[in-house]
Image (cartoon, rainbow over all chains, first blue to last red; front, side):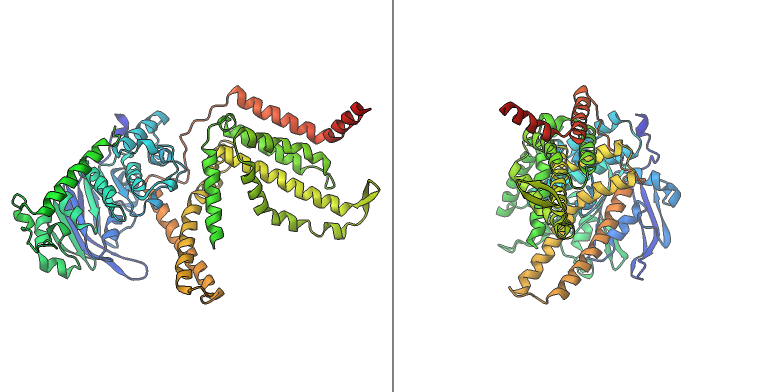
Length: 293
Length: 270
């Protein structure tokens, strides 16, 4: 496909010594450096105000650093490269109402592709594909403000998918969703082959979907390790204003300790786990039932 | 502030009406916008004492509303809500303009009363036509037509975003009002002072929201122009719609249809 000639071929991110301060003087990021490889899923966690959203906004040039640099697949993020960067890095915002501004879902999903200069047929195809990908084809002609929270969220994801980015950056993709909608969004995210950066307070999501986790505290990167290791390090979690994911905490009923994540053996036959497995299977079916494709 | 809630639900209802599928709904948005524009120009261009010449124009909104399944009660309610403005605009006419102009049934009617009635009638006609247009075309459809008529992009984008975010803004205002009233415990809280601060808050939140929306648009390649992929096709029926209605409006405008019909009836009675 000629239009798919993505200008950036390596879906990698390299952040070097990134610092940023807001105009009021608040230092939001302080010397952050990390690398993300092709196809990796990375969680960014940290307390409120730790700098997660600020970091994400640097990845596609919404904010520009006062020091340090961001590099997407070998292309530095500068004013001149912004059009290229924004085609490569798709960003899903925290509040879908900020992201869905067109009169109908189809027009909203088509907004990006139209701006890329695709012909109408190409736009229509991308809209259908993106909506099918998030199992929201039936919402096509609805106005976004009449959708439920979960529907808005998946449509917001579709608006970004329609631009066929190589890297997906998401801010709190599961906040404010009911359990089933959260599950749906999570299985959706798990099914993507894009390089993914997910900032979240949903630590179970991080544990489930991301191999690696960055921990921010007060604008500094305090850990960049495999997710399992991060969540087994209670001292680090407490110091960063976090705690273990619920799925890794001791059972609230019988007090049984969960095994450390990094050494997870086959799950013990605790009643809660069985229940969870059943519910999970049921939800899996529900997701499969959805009119995907 | 439940009037905010009522206003929102009204917009919502207009939106849902616009989602129906009738012959009128299927008419190309451009045809409907154009016909409505001709209608408004004709209604507005009458002499200021004209009353009876305006009456035939009611045909347009009434026929369209009936054909498009727009409930008359709903339209009447909206007109009533908007009417105080028209009622106030002309309220001094009868006092200032007392020269008798017409004698009907032995009673002299002052020019002021005629011009007041004319203002109210024009208001009812034009607002009804605009409401029927929105209820059969949807706000987005009207914007699309405007875009195709080469109305500047900045304006069309403003209209689109205004309409999109009025729901979000309304919801935000509602939540703030609810939070206030829950802690005001039935009293007036701290009075007007608090309302002033709430308005300021709302403005600041609007700025912040606008900033976020703009960033989201930029991220998807926004360059100052909202492109809409929807294709419009002008069919023969659409052209007939515009030509037919416009011709009728011009006839209503320059031929005194009321008198003609009246004459026919009287003549027939003889």
